[in-house]
Amino acid sequence: MDINPLKSLREYSRFVAETADRPTVRNSTVRVWSDSPYTGVATGEIFFSEGFRLRMREELDFDAGLITSYGYEAYRGQERLYWYDDFPHPHDPSLASTFPHHKHVPPVIKRNRVPAPGISSDRPNLQSVVQELEEIIEKEKSLIIK
Figure 1 (cartoon, helix red, strand yellow):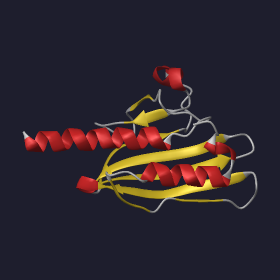
Figure 2 (spheres, rainbow, N blue to C red; figure 1 turned 90 degrees about the horizontal axis):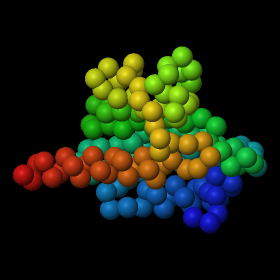
Figure 3 (spheres, helix red, strand yellow; figure 1 turned 90 degrees about the vertical axis):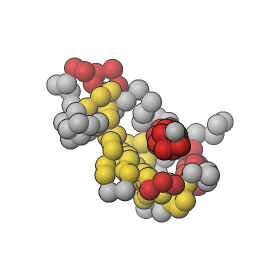
Figure 4 (tube, rainbow, N blue to C red; figure 1 turned 30 degrees about the horizontal axis):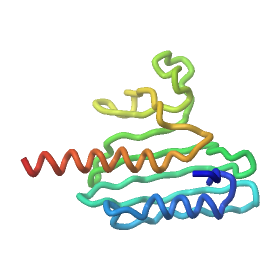
């Protein structure tokens, strides 16, 4: 990717559409819009096969080429599997390696946080979050076949 899609509304909209255009995606409600030439918002859901979905929200700074805030939540049906966010937890030393980026995981999903090495503010995250959920879908499908 030569052009940083975080630099313009047009490029980021194209990036989101291309990311959602894959065989495992049944539908997407993700929209990218802007109220100014410098900022934008991406929000909506991507619906996958097998009842999985990804809910996402990003606040974008096109001038700086950054994601200034985000949340990505993965679901199977109504069950929330995990989520990523950038709310800082400076007093949790286990998260220091990817501060402020982290992932909430079971068993107590609200309180159980782990580092998120693949998540960043200076490059798009959507592709890696989608790929992670696709891997879970594939793993579950292979268990059903066996």
